[in-house]
Image (cartoon, rainbow, N blue to C red):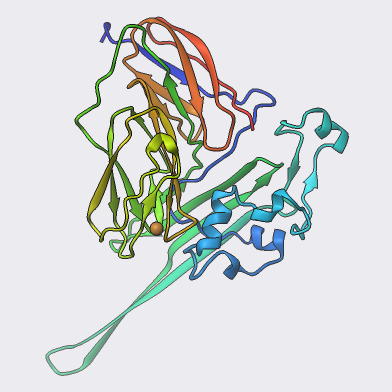
Length: 333
Ligand SMILES: [Cu+2]
């Protein structure tokens, strides 16, 4: 282990850094805080709860904001509570804080119950009825909202009862989805790996949302949905590829030959969006929910380390790696 050097770095939210929480890939649950904020029905974003319709997906990917909100605050019917004056915001326009908080406590509860009914007959022909009443079969506690202009969040705590009477709890985390990578290692070239990277299309969502790869890697785009998708990218660095459509369970591939942060879209579902970030070295990582990341196997030396995020400005700095090294970054809007 002693010969293995690795860097451990942490994205720190120090004081005024801009952070944007981008959510995981599971379809989000309903939180009426947004229905209250915009005074609109749940059907604006959901078809059948908790499934999001295309507008709901776009709303989620926009950081839980109406698309028009960038131009106009008129759509916000329930005003948030301001924690800072306008003058303060003019002085520090990129500040996350002081900002504003939702006008209501952003919590929602969802309870599901079930009754499993079965009937049978005993030897005498008498009917025996079984009723298994399960309450709660599943309970969800949601919290969600926006803080200021660039921070959105949605959290979910799920309690579920298993058929054997036991229970499970699960906590959904927000994801930061930034890519941190070493820009170059002097005198070293990295051949294209034989192994393919994978991006799935499941429930009308690309999974993962952000996929970093080494330049030259082939990505297999699998369709796990019964509907047809049509993956394409309008980016020149990805040859503006268009893979067409293919049935459930099958994959089509594309090789990213150049350094590129490619936006992937679907011609059939405009709300679908993902990113393939092709970087020049195999030393990269996607940040975890808390902004931390770890890149293994970086040789000792001095490197330019870069950060890429779908919505925030790229950042970079020189990092001297000697054994386990920590480096923090601030990324702003
Ligand atoms: Cu699609």
